Length: 556
Image 1 (cartoon, helix red, strand yellow):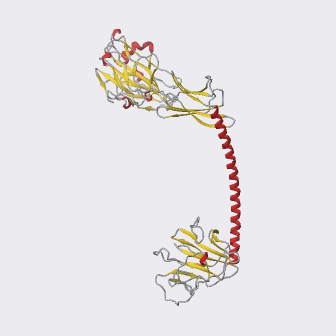
Image 2 (cartoon, helix red, strand yellow):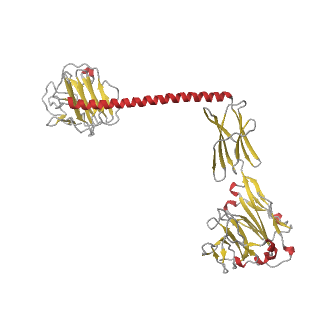
Image 3 (cartoon, rainbow, N blue to C red):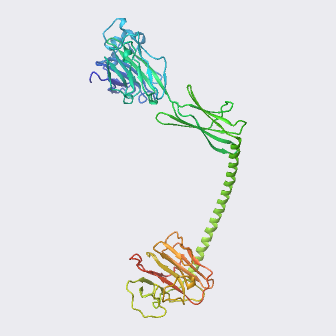
């Protein structure tokens, strides 16, 4: 190990050879390197840690000794057992301090006139965040420290060196967070003043500091604590709400304080109010506190939120008129009434929903009965088919063809509209049939009057004898004479068409979901009605699938 290196060792027992032993495991371990020290000497930091035998805290003691010697070889060392750590730490006997100081350090004996004492503050220093502070450290008697070594340390941190001075030169090897913020008063060193100026104090600077001054023949040190206080924002008060039977809820909020201040609620006479829950949050350096209280209407209605930290106090006042209490009470009454109305409405909605579900169940049952009772077989009539429509041999499918067919010209054939009718016509009773429309982007289905004009284009409306619905452009469902667009939850794969001639009813259903799509009601039919089909054009190949008349399932 280089002469200038220092060692950090856990508080443990030492054997005569200078090896560390854990008092529980008797395990030999090597000391760890700590920080640089005066050449030829090593500083041992005897540490009681929570990971060995201690409570969760650190207790440092530094002893300078010549390198190459074990702690047991330091004259005048004794064992000290603390409440928090049952381990031996090497401490110089106070009664033998002067006697052994020089021999411990390997320093040349000197007359008493060369001895000095390092003095500092009697207690902790209290400083505000953002301020500059002087860390007092001086010699007694006031002899010159110009040719001495001055070291400042921040204790209980991984990087201890805060500031180093020796022979007129200052080392820049210090804790990163302190760089550019520490300085000695060099002109004061002649008077024995080694005080350190710490600029722009942070909350994280709070802790214990040590000043060590060493001459050629003597060394002494002083330790003290710094407490950093930060006074944050003034309290901010909010009205949160009113509770019937309790009162008005207030919230007081403060930010940016350190340490955590005491937050109080008081009435106009200065009496403490029974505060409710307190919420405390902390970022790396500051506290954020919220405190709640509930107040009643009183003669003054004046309330205070006060934040106190040592000799600092900040206060916010809120004055609440009786009208505010009245408004909040009225508002809560209205809210209660509104809540009752909403609850009643929800009950009605639930009941209505149950009724709707019951109605849907009845419709479902009716749909099943209709299918079984009124299903009819439909066959496409080739004598009515437009020349561009191709029918299957069994008369159950129709597809658009690009090339018109040469067909006999008869009065029943559609000449302009891409349409075809079923062979079966009805002038009374009820009938039902189903058509598969999956994979198609456009189609028309329904029933038409026998007397419709088939030689020119006409509007597909009930007035002209058409009771038809369609799918257009792959997404738009429309019933002619119905709403502009039908709203469907999902795309039907198979459509059922039901006709009640006597009641003037034409209804369309989604067969898979057994749901109703649309109905023409209150119609007046004359003459025969025929099933109507139009597969539409191929729509650039996107609508080439056929319309397929499917047998009605009688098992459902």
